[in-house]
Every structure is written in structure tokens, then in C-alpha cells.
Length: 218
Image (cartoon, rainbow, N blue to C red; front, side, top):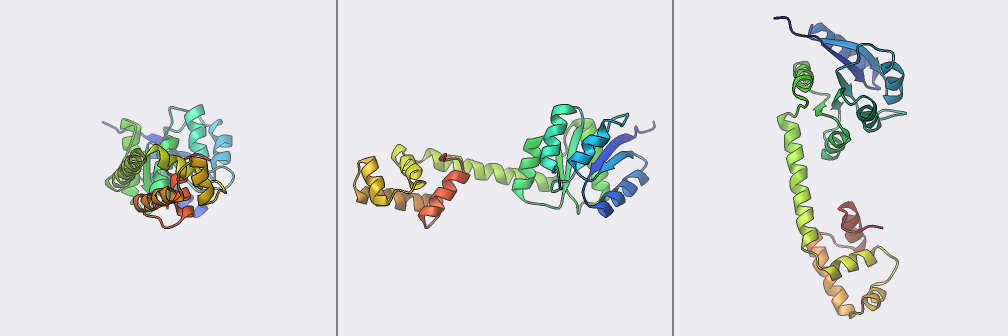
């Protein structure tokens, strides 16, 4: 039985990397690169003129004009049947999670072997997703962090949350005490309790932590 050739596109602003990957994947006999583009804007220009459409798109993240996040969101809206595999130099959990949330079905580092890239393309095309052990570990770590943050948020009292909100203002601690109708000593207790819970040492640290983890809105 002859394996079906998978049509793909490669979107990456590094010309040498992109052209090298086109050559290596084409040599496999299982992958046909029907076009490549330097960024999302270039992709939009080219995709409309290609028949058949790519089944899978390999997407870099950091690109000029239109990056991988914006390109992935655009594809999910206009070509929802095309599957997207993020291919990036970044191993940060935030990069991985942001691309997956944008609509990518898998994530690989550019240092991956060509054989794994081919496996990922075939798996995404057939099963709809590809998550290797490295990426699954990053996802699990992120989920565990979110659980810890959520648990910390649940343990805050209404007064502590109110104190956090007022900390993001220009009010002094004494003015915060007056606003909350409590003593300055009580405000000191709120502050020290939150310092310990969030492992920070300053008012600025409190506010930054609270904003980053959606405990308060400004």
C-alpha cells in the first residue's frame, strides 16, 4: 500500500532554515512542501493561490509583520481544517501554552530531528494533534502552577483581596487602612500574610504577582 503524500507549508522568517527544511522534508518522499513563506502576511498572500491547500502548516512564532500567534488565529478562522504544528526555538512554557491556546495542534523545538518532525506531521494529519514527552511535561508543569495559583487565590479572604486592589492605587498604607475602616496594625497583618503566601518582599511585588495571576484587575 502506497502511503499518501501529505501536503504542507512552512512559515518561518529564517530563509536558510526554511529552505533547508523544505529540502529535508521533500527528500522523505512522504511530505510535499507546496509553498513556504517568511511570515503570516506572506502566507496569506500565497495560500489563496494554492490548490490543494496544505493539510499541515509548520509555524514559527517570532516573525516580522505577522507573527505565529496572529497567523495561527487567522488560519483557525479562515481555514479551520488546516492543522498547525508550531516549530520554534523557544522552550518557554509561556510560548508553548500561547501557541496551543491560539490553535496549534502540536509544538516542536527547531533542534528536533527531521525524523521527529516527519512523525509529528503524520500524527497531526491523522490524529489531529501531536504532543511529545517534552512538551507534555511543560504543559503539566503549567497546569500544576495554575492549580497552586488558584489555590492561593481561594485562600485569600475578602479583606485581603480588597487590600490587594487598594495596593495597586497610589494610596499610602495609612490611607488604605482608613478606606477599609481598619487599624494600621490590621493592614500590617494583611501585608505580611500576603508577603508570605506569595513569597514576595515588597508592595510592588504583591501587585505584580496579583495582576499576573488575575487576582486583581486594574
